[in-house]
Amino acid sequence: MSLATFCTSCAGRLVHGGRHPVCSHCGRTHHRDPKVGVGVVVLDQAGRLLLVRRGVRPGKGLWALPAGFVDAGEDPRAAAARETREETGLLVEVGAVLDVYALPSVRGSHGGASFFLAFEATSVGGTLTAGDDAVEVGFFDVDELPELAFPSTRDAADRMRRRGAETGQ
Ligand SMILES: [Zn+2]
Image (spheres, rainbow, N blue to C red):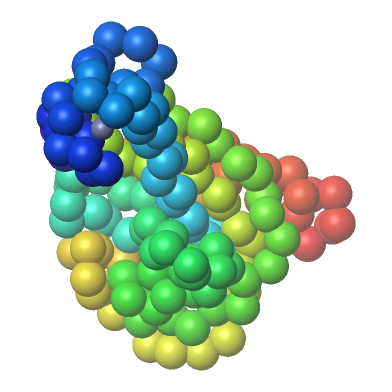
């Protein structure tokens, strides 16, 4: 998505260059809403991490947590469960927030998330099948992860592992 050119209130021309675009006609400041990404950290019985191979940019061809964008008005946990179902076929119960990651905006676009919530989640059913934006799906040993699309995936995996060590799992 490129920068807007015209004011959505009065169709005046927007002036870019400041923190936010401002309409040259009515003076309205146009705030850009951050996009919110959500994803899940799901471990199988053997402690392996659920990952999907991405079929879309950013990170196309690389592996990441099952994840996607929160729709307007959608509960973030419901969005995380929905994306997981769409990408992996698994039904999950979404638990606590593992962490929140701020993401730099992708140069020249707003195609990526502005921040990303990683949730702990537990698989409660479904059949493992790649779908939607995922071209492949699988569980991986956290010491032998495939090439990852985003640093947050590695960080979330490490957090889960430390948590497992603390609770003796
Ligand atoms: Zn205007």
